[in-house]
Amino acid sequence: MKNYVIGLLVVVIVVLASIMYKNEYSPPKNRFPLPKEISTFETKAPLILYVFFSKSNCPDCLEIIDVLNNLPPYFAVFGIVPEDELKEEKELRRITKAAFPLISVSKYRKYIPWYAPTIVGVSSVNGDILFTLPGVPGEKAYLEIFLESLYKKLYPIFLTEAFRGALSQKGVNS
Image (tube, rainbow, N blue to C red; front, side):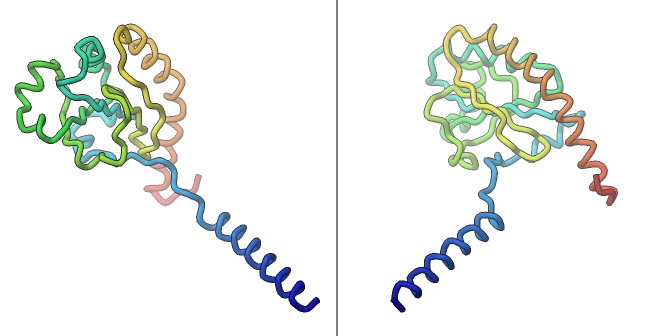
């Protein structure tokens, strides 16, 4: 009987400890490392689009780059490419026609998608990953509509986050 009581106490302690641990240490959200280059933009773009691609991707899949080259200023676009291709940046830009900054994949290995090209949408406020969208042939028109509607829906959220951030910098609790 004494062994059952000791066993029950051990189980209760383990369950309570796991509950306390879960409440105290929630797993971190998927945060994407924000680039230093974002500060070079005249206006801080609330939405950052990272495009994982390579010059060896199918040409029809890379047509999304045309859309990304011509986005309004509330989008910041960064291309993430293999290190060996970044060494030949002029050739890469000639083939893909990418007009946005290119970054080496070395810092983003943890986030490499299974399929390329892929667009990862990230909040510039806190680095939260908002969406992942693979680039497929014929996606050009869809991408334009998707990004426009996404921004219209997320704009109020970005304003709220920016306002809270400004208040917290001034020492005001929201």
